[in-house]
Image 1 (cartoon, rainbow, N blue to C red):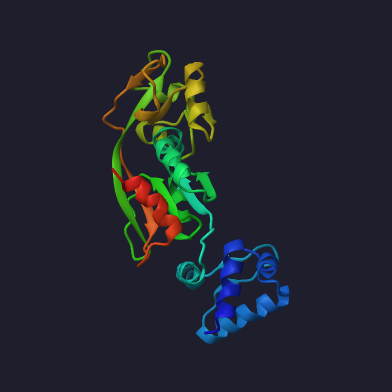
Image 2: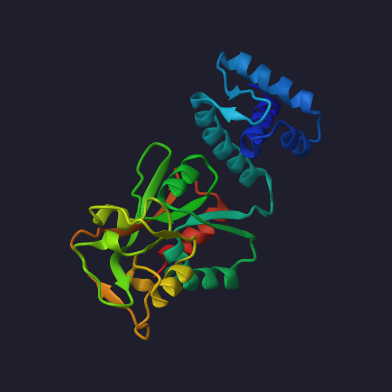
Length: 266
């Protein structure tokens, strides 16, 4: 297998674009397409489904992308004296707002590496770490496979919040403030509300509930004692464990190990 062909495939898969891969490799777009075609022929497998609008990976292509990405990063660690790669982190909104900040502060005081932090919901974080878009994710998913492993960090308790007293048997009668359509309110209510506000910020969720514009389910660690909100501990609400997930490296790359060592240090 020619490493040039693998590199062409890796960049094309990562950017979902032949043209961007060509820019990175400083070769013609037709050369990128030709190299990937030769790679497919050498493996006797279709890796990319070609479309005029976008690049789609086959199942075999996705598997090769993850392995090739790990291989490329490991070779970079071996041959590059100074590792300047950005660290890509995916995290739940509530964790970023409260729990993660002290660790982030400690990390930034020790390292000057570029950080790319994205707030996502559970399904997106799972897909992101498995697809190699993130180096580390922090979520409630305990993922254990040949590709990824999760480490339990702590226990998180969820609570229902409102400004005024509510009827817990008829949650659908109130306006809901949710992060996504996978929000826990959908799981604990017999019926969905007819009025729903979807926002991508835990601060905004708290602000809207304080303004009596709806009810919400949030982690208890994002609430302050001074906040004038009613909280309900419901048996139907799951108590989640928080996990840190990374790809399974035989030797953890330096840019990932820096953060994991900060998180796990006592």
